[in-house]
Length: 322
Image 1 (cartoon, helix red, strand yellow):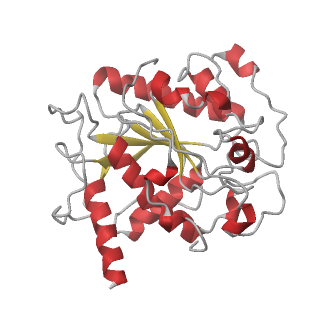
Image 2 (image 1 turned 45 degrees about the vertical axis):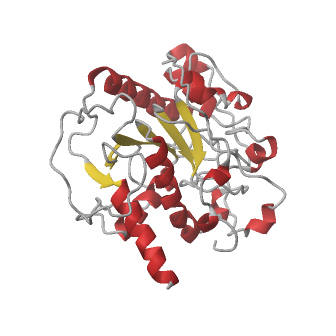
Image 3 (image 1 turned 60 degrees about the horizontal axis):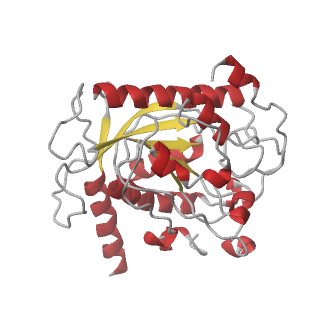
């Protein structure tokens, strides 16, 4: 759905604190026919880690200095977007040209077009058009580039989750879409570490699609409060069939629903181009239904109070520094 967003786009990664995530710390059938099934490249602009990559041998952890000649990508975000897409980290091709999903074998831009999320087939060079023209934003869990996501450490990925939550709290999109299963599993691992009760699943087997986890924000607050009362983080609130309606809903979303698609990298063999298209199409349909009906797409949501969680993280960091 084409729309216009008048708020400024924050393009600077330094707008957020990335100290924890850098350094040594660590269409239809005719449209489907146009998708290439010949992608066997050894590199990809989206380096999400998923099972059965085309490489037989995965790369080991790579320290940041190994790719110090490459720059991170700026976030393309503004408030009240329909969807923010979150990759795991920039690939070398994307970092070298300073555009998202820039490798020619990556399926991201085709999936946007074929699903109806964009009205025309865009190129990576058009990425800055997404927030203002289509209500879509782009970011990554980790800002530093690598050739493959295997070169990131698990500790580094988990340490990046609070920064992603801060972005969600500030920009409050209708949907956060993880483009790849690895990011969502890291996200869930972080929640479990912070005492949220989430369904257990084997590594990387949780199916893509709409998820039970829903991010919730204070209805009348645009900033984190230092005196936010402590809540039971494992509490699974009662089923809600309608979104809360308040005077601010037209300006600021009170909920962010989470959707997961397979990685659009051609390195991923478990999911082919048609699979990626299907999930992007599902996302587009759910998004349109949410806008038109205001009915929650999650029958029994597990709410995560972002303000409470971030306060807990900040308090823990303060205590450890004493």
